[in-house]
Image 1 (cartoon, rainbow, N blue to C red):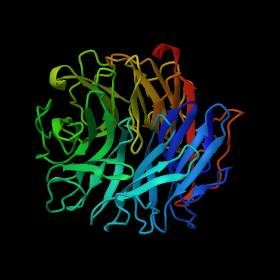
Image 2: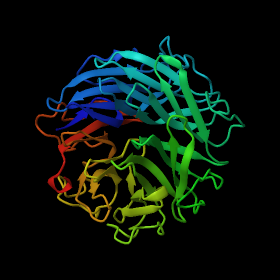
Image 3: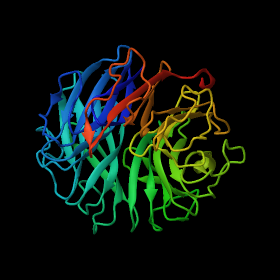
Image 4: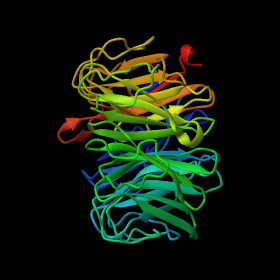
Length: 455
């Protein structure tokens, strides 16, 4: 099942019992369903959480979250009872927090992070802001399985709530916060980073009382602890940090990169608790594995995938992935997952007509300045068991991916293409008139069964 949706962009997706929950943002709704939540503000970007049935292609609910200023949802997770949780950022002083919010009012600065919990029917059950007197944004989300939520992001606030150490505001530090909706006493947070810019882009629990955070850093003094790579090697490097649950103490932290510009854009954990990270690089000297699928950079930007394992995560398997133009793992979405067999699934965008492919559903580049891609690697990153383009004649990208227990794969992103291929039973086959910066753009969802070679 593939379909367009009448909102501008959906970055995050979570698969649950045959449905896909989507974290989106749009200046308006062109959805074929009534929208719950906050009322629309004309021409103002609002966050949306959508629940889409993958069998029928019909929306179960659509909920708008926002106010009189910019609001966007980037990540979504679903618990065992069907409650959805979303995080992102808002500049709205009238953000609709609930009476039991940890932080009911906007704290100041350019933006605050937020957490919203929705009932299975799409009603807002809990909503809180999260931030200090400067800018804050939420870009990572994980659930603990007992009603608690981990939110990760970037803060420029010296007074970010709950942090252990306060100090002067810097160029942007990483925060990780734990909270339990309705229980203010459970909240705790840690803020860490160096003297230059950091950005967190993903969180993943390892199933062994640990939580991995990934992103990028430009700080030579970023905190390293038992690292694989001790120092910053280029303009920026991917960082990977493990925090202990429940106290959020750092137990491992490393740089990973070459002499160019490297960044981390997603993290997942395999069933052994090993972290697998996605990134973007223009370095030609990343520490590739001897048997890596792609041992050298191909030109421009390349995506890369790395797996850390063994005692202290000191063994690194890394492969480039790209063609002769620019190739990137998804910028804003939850772009990497590991299935029960250990296969690594990655989505992103590419400008390369010669991207490596395997048994593709779309064997040729669609056109425009970018197509989305979906690629799957075996556990050792030594081969490619599936890869395909996904795009039409204009700009397309895939940003988020999730895997369902029944083998369903759901990816989400956006398209400017009027001719993006859609099946006859798609809920929406043509672009609706959602306009951003003068251009028509719609969210796009791709759902398929795991290709046979990846099982």
